[in-house]
Amino acid sequence: MFVLVRAITYAAVFIGFVLVYLPGRFLSWSGIVAPTTTGAPQITGMIMVAVGTAIALWCVFTFVFIGKGTPAPFDPPRKLVICGPYRFVRNPMYIGAGMTLAGAALYYESVSLLIYAAIFFAVAHLFVVAYEERVLRRSFGSEYEAYCRRVRRWLPKRRMN
Image (tube, rainbow, N blue to C red; front, side, top):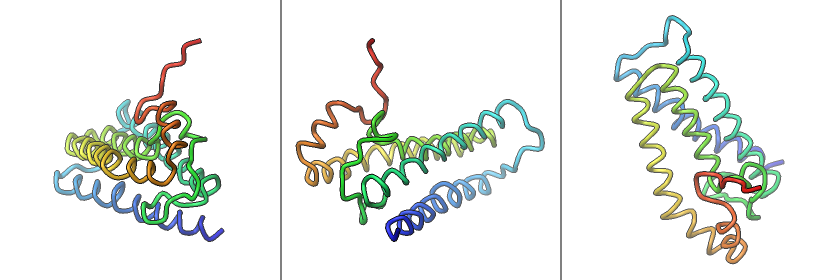
């Protein structure tokens, strides 16, 4: 149960800072305010935010209940997590967070927020390649290597039936 509390705390800090505070600053600096009408961009943006948030939360709970750890690099899962959303791509949490940011950019029709989302994806990619994958190879060895051969980093494989 304590691992759940830790995971929720770490996720709340990350979400609060990266997905709420910083985008709020971008909107404030650019003078963008909430839309007064709800059109296709706002509805699509809200759907993207909801789906992205659901993916990210699914990842957090998968880390807690399957991996017995948290998403935080300093308190990682004890087991390699390859089920749930991780059976489709190796980094669904970043995809969910990025989708949330892109959805907010669409909702506000904000180019600056879209640029922030692109920067988020670029930084996430660099972090994954330069740090996470190396740590996972060292921690889980051949099990992680086999997982990498089966599951792609960012885009799911097309099924050939």
